[in-house]
Amino acid sequence: MSSAPQTRAGFAAIIGAPNAGKSTLTNALVGEKVSIVTHKVQTTRFQIRGIAMLPLKNGADAQVVLVDTPGIFSAKESDRLAKSMVHAAWTGVNESEAIVHVVDAPAYHRHKNGEGTSQDRLSVSDTQRVSEGLKKRERGKVFLALNKIDEIPHDVLLAQIAEFSALDIYEEIFMISALNMDGVDKLAATLANAMPEGPYLYPEDQAADIPSRLMAAEITREKIFLRLHDELPYASTVETEKWKQQKNGDIRIDQVIYVRRDSQKPIVLGKGGKTIKDIGAAARRDMQDWLGRKVHLFLFVKVRDNWQNDKARYAESGLEFDV
Image (cartoon, rainbow, N blue to C red; front, side, top):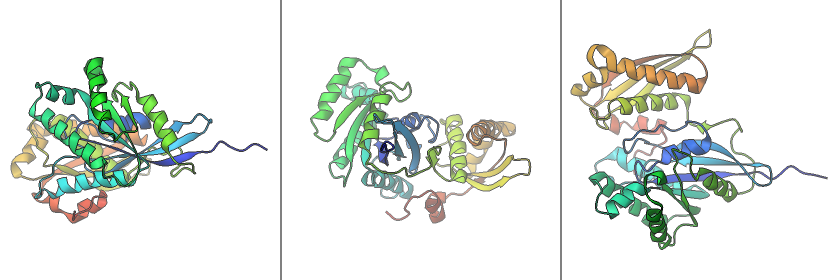
């Protein structure tokens, strides 16, 4: 009497310094975009769970729930949002069966070679902070993913492997390019086998565990970062105020972009409203691809100088207010 192949399911935390490529790797493993990606550090502000169905050798699939976490960095005591973000990252670590520490290998090399920028220096410092923190983890196998390998020579990677191996933290070290998918399959197979045997935790066709209103807000926030990366600091957020399905199946979404100062409002609006129109058009396209239906998106800009201390905003995104 035959039985179905045994499935596996569990959680894998994707952690690392800001801008190491965590969200890009999460999207690559899931096979579609579930986490926003920009070149700005600290883009991810809370845990996003991407659900990857990864094949096992026995013919079944493992369901790996990838916890894409905010970047781990040295948060100022006065910065409530930053402290909550770092706390969310470490919470993801302690709740997972597997942990993938993603490292920006080129930034690490530039700093070690004396050619790095101030951002590279911070990246290396934060990477070392993560490694030290992993020694105190409560559970989970730890894997290292040296990312962006297409940007540095192979001998440099070998030196980095030796350096990180000496820390005696990592079960295995992978050389990957999350953007180009190099080495991602090997990492995926390892994560699949690291999951415990058991039934799936989510429906097989679900790609992410994030409320639709929050995902829509994240899409718009990504477009703001991409469009205004030089002009607007990390002083903006997006809130989906209304979500209504119309009789013809279309979705109407009303969102508010909050900035902290009056001087930032015209930056988002642009001359004659051009900037906000461009942001809205780009966000609407992504939302339509994501939802598979027509979206009518309406954006408004308001000033709220203390939105980072709004307790309700933390609760809706799964962040803890007092950490």
